[in-house]
Length: 414
Ligand code: SAH
Ligand code: SF4
Image 1: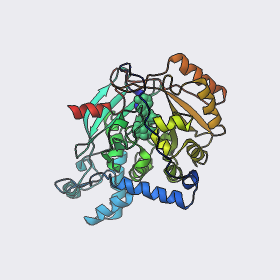
Image 2: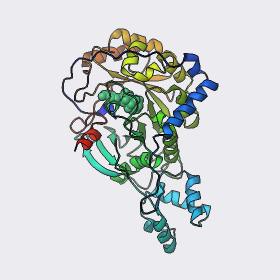
Image 3: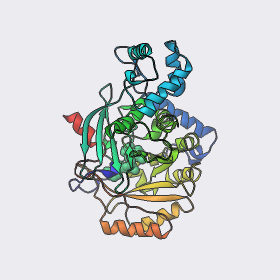
Image 4: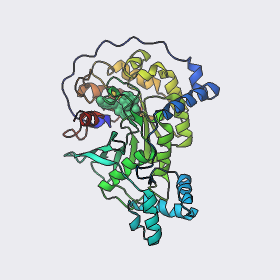
């Protein structure tokens, strides 16, 4: 995740901001639950389809089974003359047992194993780069079948045997938040369900955590954060399908409470994600005035702070037990004053929330500097005094990791 990455050069001062274009639609057009926001949602989904991943059929004609919904899996098997119960059986082998070889499916007779292997594959993305830090944080650059690459990180808990897997949702990003390295890359394409679930499954392979632990049994890879490359709500259909697979109780069985989706504020899709998936929400706020947020999170020009906060207030899955996380990257002299901390708590008053203060992680030629520790502490104190938990995200994997997106950039240069 961008916040865990490595130290860097001392960057130059922030450049002069670009002119701010007029806002797209008036606030009521987006925030309403009615027609106009539905139109906007359809527009976002249609645009996402233009960046679809390649089909799951390999050059030799075999079809990838990972990433299919249960219904799609049953349909694929029906096409080769197999009954619906086979789908249930295969689901178990693929997502509970984690097998990638049909020959290991002991409940399937040998002739059928062979027939399946002729028609289908159970794949994983290829790990083009794997780095493990001194603090055990592990980062992969995964390469997909068409050669595109995205980053995944596993951040183990420091004390207990559990940890978070940070997944990418897109190759590149259409948005260009000014402090984010991924934001310097254009969007190449969306990742498909197979590639999103595949990142998690390949990370699992790496720790040999199969079969999937059941229910509350401790797991090493215990939570998912959609905080890697890309904006998950601009690839909603694929992300949703991947999360449904991960949450399915007969497979990986990760509860929605253990999944956090981070968005830069795609307001029309936030309601849908809340209703349909019910996962935890993290919102990349980073600024408390539209003037500054327009500059550092340009999506704000479309969905300004008031609309974003309103969408958080109505987010269905938020309760005291499952608070919304406001992410706030601390940029020295840009957004880290005490006055801004006070405005932040005013903005989010009444929302079950916590504020995650992320030390800025510089990358070559980035325009900002991280806040000082003293300033971080002053900011955090104000937020905590207002009753919000305000953890400062500790940088992890400093010896290996670069800001999210850098591994891919380096690989492309190579
Ligand atoms: N597109 C989504 C999710 C991916 S970014 C989003 O923007 O929320 C995940 C988090 O990392 C965001 O809060 C993002 O603002 C933050 N981030 C990006 N670049 C960073 C950097 N260089 N240092 C610290 N945090 C960064
Ligand atoms: Fe980076 Fe997220 Fe902004 Fe995209 S939306 S540029 S991934 S911070």
